[in-house]
Image (cartoon, rainbow, N blue to C red; front, side, top):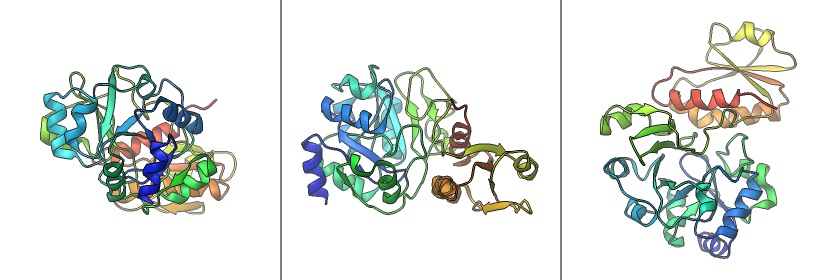
Length: 303
Protein backbone atom coordinates (compact mmCIF):
# COMPACT_ATOMS: atom_id res chain seq x y z
CA UNK A 1 0.00 0.00 0.00
CA UNK A 2 2.88 2.38 0.70
CA UNK A 3 4.28 1.90 -2.79
CA UNK A 4 0.84 2.59 -4.26
CA UNK A 5 0.50 5.71 -2.10
CA UNK A 6 3.88 7.00 -3.30
CA UNK A 7 2.90 6.47 -6.94
CA UNK A 8 -0.33 8.38 -6.40
CA UNK A 9 1.42 11.28 -4.68
CA UNK A 10 4.07 11.53 -7.39
CA UNK A 11 1.32 11.57 -10.02
CA UNK A 12 -0.39 14.52 -8.31
CA UNK A 13 -3.00 12.50 -6.42
CA UNK A 14 -4.33 12.68 -2.87
CA UNK A 15 -3.61 10.14 -0.14
CA UNK A 16 -5.16 10.13 3.33
CA UNK A 17 -2.81 8.75 5.95
CA UNK A 18 -2.71 8.32 9.72
CA UNK A 19 -0.64 10.39 12.11
CA UNK A 20 -0.53 10.19 15.89
CA UNK A 21 -2.80 13.27 16.06
CA UNK A 22 -5.48 12.94 13.34
CA UNK A 23 -5.64 11.56 9.79
CA UNK A 24 -4.14 13.86 7.17
CA UNK A 25 -5.12 14.49 3.55
CA UNK A 26 -1.79 14.50 1.74
CA UNK A 27 -0.49 15.97 -1.52
CA UNK A 28 3.00 16.54 -2.91
CA UNK A 29 3.99 19.84 -1.29
CA UNK A 30 6.08 20.84 -4.35
CA UNK A 31 3.16 20.33 -6.77
CA UNK A 32 0.97 23.41 -7.05
CA UNK A 33 -1.64 21.48 -9.07
CA UNK A 34 -1.90 18.72 -6.48
CA UNK A 35 -2.17 21.18 -3.60
CA UNK A 36 -4.88 23.16 -5.40
CA UNK A 37 -6.86 19.94 -5.83
CA UNK A 38 -6.42 19.28 -2.09
CA UNK A 39 -7.87 22.70 -1.27
CA UNK A 40 -10.82 22.05 -3.59
CA UNK A 41 -11.58 18.61 -2.14
CA UNK A 42 -11.39 19.84 1.43
CA UNK A 43 -13.23 23.10 0.71
CA UNK A 44 -10.44 25.00 2.43
CA UNK A 45 -10.01 28.77 1.93
CA UNK A 46 -7.00 29.51 -0.28
CA UNK A 47 -5.45 31.82 2.31
CA UNK A 48 -5.40 29.16 5.04
CA UNK A 49 -1.87 27.68 5.11
CA UNK A 50 -1.02 23.98 5.18
CA UNK A 51 1.45 22.00 7.27
CA UNK A 52 4.26 20.23 5.40
CA UNK A 53 5.08 16.81 6.84
CA UNK A 54 8.69 15.59 6.67
CA UNK A 55 10.41 12.28 7.35
CA UNK A 56 13.21 13.60 9.56
CA UNK A 57 14.16 16.78 11.39
CA UNK A 58 17.36 16.94 9.31
CA UNK A 59 15.14 17.93 6.36
CA UNK A 60 13.88 21.07 8.07
CA UNK A 61 16.56 23.18 6.37
CA UNK A 62 15.32 22.09 2.92
CA UNK A 63 12.00 23.80 3.61
CA UNK A 64 12.69 26.56 6.11
CA UNK A 65 15.25 28.71 7.86
CA UNK A 66 16.53 27.26 11.12
CA UNK A 67 16.49 29.32 14.31
CA UNK A 68 17.82 28.48 17.73
CA UNK A 69 14.28 27.87 19.02
CA UNK A 70 13.20 25.74 16.04
CA UNK A 71 16.34 23.58 16.31
CA UNK A 72 15.85 23.07 20.04
CA UNK A 73 12.16 22.21 19.68
CA UNK A 74 12.71 19.87 16.73
CA UNK A 75 15.39 18.00 18.64
CA UNK A 76 13.19 17.72 21.73
CA UNK A 77 9.80 16.89 20.18
CA UNK A 78 10.25 15.41 16.68
CA UNK A 79 9.00 12.95 15.69
CA UNK A 80 5.87 14.02 17.52
CA UNK A 81 2.74 16.18 17.62
CA UNK A 82 4.39 19.57 17.16
CA UNK A 83 4.35 21.89 14.14
CA UNK A 84 7.11 24.51 13.93
CA UNK A 85 6.61 27.67 11.86
CA UNK A 86 9.76 29.16 10.29
CA UNK A 87 10.64 31.38 7.35
CA UNK A 88 10.07 29.28 4.24
CA UNK A 89 12.49 28.07 1.58
CA UNK A 90 11.27 27.12 -1.88
CA UNK A 91 7.73 26.35 -0.78
CA UNK A 92 4.96 27.22 -3.27
CA UNK A 93 2.72 30.14 -2.33
CA UNK A 94 -0.32 27.87 -2.54
CA UNK A 95 0.97 25.86 0.44
CA UNK A 96 1.61 28.86 2.69
CA UNK A 97 -1.35 31.01 1.71
CA UNK A 98 1.13 33.58 0.39
CA UNK A 99 2.91 33.94 3.73
CA UNK A 100 6.70 34.04 3.96
CA UNK A 101 6.53 31.32 6.63
CA UNK A 102 5.75 27.59 6.54
CA UNK A 103 4.60 25.09 9.16
CA UNK A 104 6.72 21.93 9.32
CA UNK A 105 6.23 18.69 11.24
CA UNK A 106 7.72 15.21 11.60
CA UNK A 107 4.90 12.90 12.76
CA UNK A 108 5.58 9.91 14.98
CA UNK A 109 3.05 7.45 13.53
CA UNK A 110 5.04 4.54 12.01
CA UNK A 111 2.89 4.39 8.86
CA UNK A 112 3.21 8.14 8.28
CA UNK A 113 6.98 7.91 8.66
CA UNK A 114 7.15 4.92 6.31
CA UNK A 115 5.19 6.87 3.70
CA UNK A 116 7.32 10.00 4.07
CA UNK A 117 10.58 8.08 3.82
CA UNK A 118 9.42 6.22 0.73
CA UNK A 119 8.11 9.42 -0.89
CA UNK A 120 11.37 11.26 -0.22
CA UNK A 121 9.73 14.67 -0.14
CA UNK A 122 7.38 16.90 1.79
CA UNK A 123 3.69 16.06 2.02
CA UNK A 124 1.31 18.98 2.56
CA UNK A 125 -1.52 17.68 4.70
CA UNK A 126 -4.37 19.26 6.61
CA UNK A 127 -6.83 16.99 8.44
CA UNK A 128 -8.66 14.60 6.10
CA UNK A 129 -12.17 16.03 6.45
CA UNK A 130 -14.27 18.83 5.00
CA UNK A 131 -13.06 22.23 6.13
CA UNK A 132 -14.23 23.38 9.54
CA UNK A 133 -15.75 20.05 10.53
CA UNK A 134 -14.69 17.48 13.11
CA UNK A 135 -11.26 16.01 12.39
CA UNK A 136 -10.98 12.27 11.61
CA UNK A 137 -9.23 9.91 14.01
CA UNK A 138 -9.97 6.68 12.11
CA UNK A 139 -9.83 5.65 8.46
CA UNK A 140 -13.61 5.15 8.55
CA UNK A 141 -14.09 8.80 9.49
CA UNK A 142 -12.12 9.74 6.36
CA UNK A 143 -14.28 7.47 4.18
CA UNK A 144 -17.44 9.01 5.63
CA UNK A 145 -16.20 12.56 5.01
CA UNK A 146 -14.35 12.40 1.71
CA UNK A 147 -15.51 9.22 -0.02
CA UNK A 148 -14.14 8.91 -3.52
CA UNK A 149 -12.66 12.41 -3.53
CA UNK A 150 -9.47 10.91 -2.10
CA UNK A 151 -7.46 8.48 -4.24
CA UNK A 152 -6.26 6.21 -1.43
CA UNK A 153 -6.82 5.90 2.32
CA UNK A 154 -4.10 4.25 4.38
CA UNK A 155 -5.58 2.63 7.49
CA UNK A 156 -3.25 2.84 10.47
CA UNK A 157 -5.88 2.35 13.18
CA UNK A 158 -7.20 4.93 15.65
CA UNK A 159 -4.98 7.95 16.32
CA UNK A 160 -3.11 7.73 19.61
CA UNK A 161 -3.24 11.44 20.55
CA UNK A 162 -6.57 12.44 18.99
CA UNK A 163 -6.14 16.23 18.79
CA UNK A 164 -4.01 18.15 16.32
CA UNK A 165 -0.39 19.14 16.75
CA UNK A 166 0.76 22.07 18.83
CA UNK A 167 1.76 24.91 16.48
CA UNK A 168 4.67 27.10 17.57
CA UNK A 169 5.72 30.17 15.62
CA UNK A 170 9.53 30.30 15.59
CA UNK A 171 9.81 32.91 12.84
CA UNK A 172 10.20 35.55 15.58
CA UNK A 173 9.76 35.45 19.33
CA UNK A 174 8.42 31.91 19.94
CA UNK A 175 4.69 31.71 20.63
CA UNK A 176 2.09 28.94 20.68
CA UNK A 177 -0.44 29.67 17.95
CA UNK A 178 -2.49 26.52 18.55
CA UNK A 179 -2.30 24.31 21.65
CA UNK A 180 -2.15 20.64 20.79
CA UNK A 181 -0.56 17.27 21.38
CA UNK A 182 2.57 18.64 23.08
CA UNK A 183 1.46 20.42 26.28
CA UNK A 184 2.60 23.94 27.02
CA UNK A 185 4.23 22.73 30.24
CA UNK A 186 6.48 20.32 28.31
CA UNK A 187 7.52 23.09 25.91
CA UNK A 188 8.36 25.48 28.74
CA UNK A 189 10.60 22.87 30.34
CA UNK A 190 12.68 22.99 27.15
CA UNK A 191 12.71 26.67 26.11
CA UNK A 192 11.28 28.54 29.08
CA UNK A 193 8.07 30.61 29.34
CA UNK A 194 6.12 30.92 26.09
CA UNK A 195 3.04 32.96 25.25
CA UNK A 196 -0.19 31.99 23.51
CA UNK A 197 -1.31 33.65 20.28
CA UNK A 198 0.40 35.69 17.62
CA UNK A 199 -0.01 37.46 14.29
CA UNK A 200 0.96 34.60 11.95
CA UNK A 201 -1.96 32.76 10.36
CA UNK A 202 -1.98 29.06 11.16
CA UNK A 203 -4.26 26.04 10.67
CA UNK A 204 -7.11 25.63 13.12
CA UNK A 205 -7.05 29.17 14.47
CA UNK A 206 -10.38 30.46 13.11
CA UNK A 207 -13.14 31.39 15.56
CA UNK A 208 -15.23 28.40 14.44
CA UNK A 209 -13.61 25.07 13.62
CA UNK A 210 -13.77 21.35 14.52
CA UNK A 211 -17.56 21.67 14.51
CA UNK A 212 -20.10 18.83 14.38
CA UNK A 213 -23.53 19.32 12.82
CA UNK A 214 -25.09 19.53 16.29
CA UNK A 215 -24.77 22.75 18.25
CA UNK A 216 -22.04 22.60 20.92
CA UNK A 217 -22.77 24.21 24.30
CA UNK A 218 -19.98 24.58 26.86
CA UNK A 219 -20.62 23.91 30.53
CA UNK A 220 -19.15 22.97 33.88
CA UNK A 221 -20.07 19.85 35.86
CA UNK A 222 -22.26 22.07 38.06
CA UNK A 223 -24.14 23.78 35.20
CA UNK A 224 -24.41 20.97 32.62
CA UNK A 225 -27.86 19.72 33.68
CA UNK A 226 -29.42 23.19 33.85
CA UNK A 227 -27.90 24.26 30.54
CA UNK A 228 -29.06 21.13 28.75
CA UNK A 229 -32.65 21.74 29.84
CA UNK A 230 -32.49 25.23 28.34
CA UNK A 231 -31.42 24.03 24.87
CA UNK A 232 -34.00 23.29 22.18
CA UNK A 233 -34.16 19.89 20.51
CA UNK A 234 -32.65 16.57 21.49
CA UNK A 235 -29.63 17.07 23.73
CA UNK A 236 -26.79 14.86 24.95
CA UNK A 237 -24.46 15.72 27.83
CA UNK A 238 -20.75 14.82 27.70
CA UNK A 239 -19.38 14.94 31.24
CA UNK A 240 -17.67 12.84 33.87
CA UNK A 241 -20.65 12.99 36.22
CA UNK A 242 -24.14 11.70 35.41
CA UNK A 243 -26.40 14.79 35.21
CA UNK A 244 -29.46 12.69 36.04
CA UNK A 245 -32.53 12.19 33.85
CA UNK A 246 -30.77 13.27 30.66
CA UNK A 247 -29.09 11.62 27.69
CA UNK A 248 -25.52 11.23 28.90
CA UNK A 249 -22.17 10.00 27.60
CA UNK A 250 -19.38 9.66 30.16
CA UNK A 251 -16.11 11.48 29.51
CA UNK A 252 -12.98 9.50 30.44
CA UNK A 253 -11.11 10.33 33.62
CA UNK A 254 -7.89 11.68 32.08
CA UNK A 255 -7.20 14.45 29.58
CA UNK A 256 -5.20 12.01 27.43
CA UNK A 257 -8.18 9.66 27.16
CA UNK A 258 -10.60 12.53 26.48
CA UNK A 259 -8.35 13.79 23.67
CA UNK A 260 -8.17 10.33 22.07
CA UNK A 261 -11.95 9.95 22.08
CA UNK A 262 -13.29 13.51 21.77
CA UNK A 263 -13.75 13.72 18.00
CA UNK A 264 -15.28 10.24 17.84
CA UNK A 265 -17.78 11.26 20.55
CA UNK A 266 -18.75 14.42 18.65
CA UNK A 267 -19.19 12.40 15.46
CA UNK A 268 -21.27 9.78 17.26
CA UNK A 269 -23.56 12.46 18.68
CA UNK A 270 -24.24 13.60 15.11
CA UNK A 271 -24.82 10.02 13.97
CA UNK A 272 -27.28 9.51 16.83
CA UNK A 273 -29.30 12.51 15.69
CA UNK A 274 -28.75 14.89 18.60
CA UNK A 275 -29.47 18.56 17.96
CA UNK A 276 -27.13 19.84 20.66
CA UNK A 277 -24.15 18.61 22.66
CA UNK A 278 -23.60 20.04 26.12
CA UNK A 279 -19.99 19.30 26.99
CA UNK A 280 -18.03 20.00 30.15
CA UNK A 281 -14.73 21.82 29.64
CA UNK A 282 -11.68 20.17 31.26
CA UNK A 283 -9.13 21.94 33.45
CA UNK A 284 -6.87 23.89 31.08
CA UNK A 285 -3.58 22.22 31.92
CA UNK A 286 -1.64 19.57 30.04
CA UNK A 287 -3.72 18.28 27.12
CA UNK A 288 -6.75 19.95 28.69
CA UNK A 289 -5.64 23.25 27.13
CA UNK A 290 -5.87 21.76 23.61
CA UNK A 291 -9.19 20.05 24.37
CA UNK A 292 -10.70 23.30 25.65
CA UNK A 293 -9.40 25.14 22.57
CA UNK A 294 -11.08 22.64 20.23
CA UNK A 295 -14.36 22.72 22.14
CA UNK A 296 -14.47 26.52 22.16
CA UNK A 297 -13.98 26.57 18.40
CA UNK A 298 -16.59 23.83 17.93
CA UNK A 299 -18.99 26.03 19.90
CA UNK A 300 -18.05 29.17 17.94
CA UNK A 301 -20.45 31.39 16.00
CA UNK A 302 -22.17 29.89 12.96
CA UNK A 303 -23.73 31.51 9.91
